[in-house]
Image (cartoon, rainbow, N blue to C red):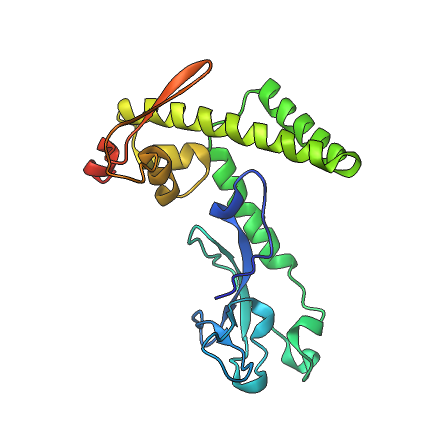
Amino acid sequence: MLVEWDWWTVDFGDAHAGAAGVLVGGSEPGPVYFDVGSGSDVPSTSHWSAYDGRAGRPRAEALRAVCACGWRSAAQYPLDWDTIGDQPLYEADVDLTGPLADRTAHLSVVRDAAVPLPERLAALLVEMAEQLTATAADAPLAALRAAGVLERIAARVSRETAGALCDDGTSAKAVATALGTTRSKALVLLAGHDPVGGEAVTGSWRGGSARYRLGCSVLHRGR
């Protein structure tokens, strides 16, 4: 199924991607499918603009903000089909101000609960993003090389820190709240993904070492 999120932030990534969700009869309908002729691969989507009642698809009655984490806004925003008429929803001037405001309020709650970044580090991240964007325009290969270096640094620090948290018995719930992510993603981070057999894996890098276990005690406790 094609999942098309309307809103995404660098702060929280896919964990809190947001969209305008559809309501039909007071509940969320399943995905809609598109008839593309013969073949076993039938494309589908859950994007709000597809629920326009055309070609046998359900017609959205209202919209509300939804988040990839599972959160749903209490407020609902009915669609005025007298105004929309028979035009496709993607061509209609649908006002998403309400759902966007609700989603922004949800992110504020997540952000307030998350651990704050040190000011100097936050400023460095902003500067790095600006530098990479500028370099990508002038020297794209250099930008890709720099991005690769940053990915490897981030992976090393992530594994080392996750290993330390796992050894300390920090719960997945606490990690998820601090990072502004979901518990399932926190569990993956703490587990470290040993792809072979779940034994302790030690990786050495210049400047330190990291330990990460698929059989992390946090997983065993189901926390």
